[in-house]
Amino acid sequence: MRRIGIKDYKDKTLDMIITVINQKGGVGKTTTSVNLAYTLAKVKNTALIDLDPEGGATVSFGMRREKKDYPLGGKSVNIFNVEMFPAHIGLLKVELNGDIESTVSMLHKISESFDYLVIDTPPNLGTLSVSAMMAADKIVTPITPQPLVLEAARNLDSRLSSLNKTALAFTNMSKKAVSVEYSAVKSIDIAIPQSKLFSEATRLGVPAIRYEEFRVKKPKFGSLYEKLAKVVTES
Image (cartoon, rainbow, N blue to C red; front, side, top):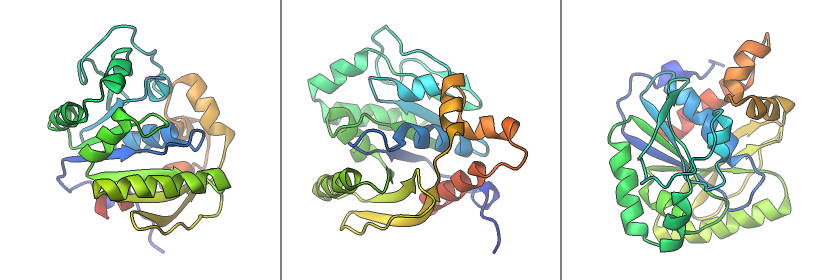
């Protein structure tokens, strides 16, 4: 079987917003956002915006959550060829204001400068998450084979249906893909196994697959995220 890689989609010209979401914490949502953005940035002008006030994606790129109140898109730093928009305290104000229409408009404006804009979201279905879903061209949800996670996927399906949106679900922290088939959430046959490499990379402030490139003689996670990127961008 031919190995699916970045080269299969590097010549495509796309202006795409990719939202990574799951209202259940602990499923690897931020890990997905960080490594998907890093993968796409190898071939296209890619940005990652951290919409989670807790700032997990920000920390994963070796930064701290900003203590200043910035507008969305108000500050960014280029790290590992990814234009990183860090989390800041102003996100809490956006969440509480509940102004979804304005937030969606700002996300679209930010995306105009990039081929791909990956959005990491909070573990809930509040203003920031709903805005990110509404703005998205593609929605990705990582799931794990636990009952509460599968129940969360069912709840997400209901919200997506109300927004007339769909999501691709892939399996995280497992060697075997889990199948869920709802009206708005569809599984893809991709499973990314658990590894201490991810926690080590987060502690060092680098994307896991970049860490793997230097740490492991025979890297395997890079090809999995390449496959995920290809499916997401071409589906």
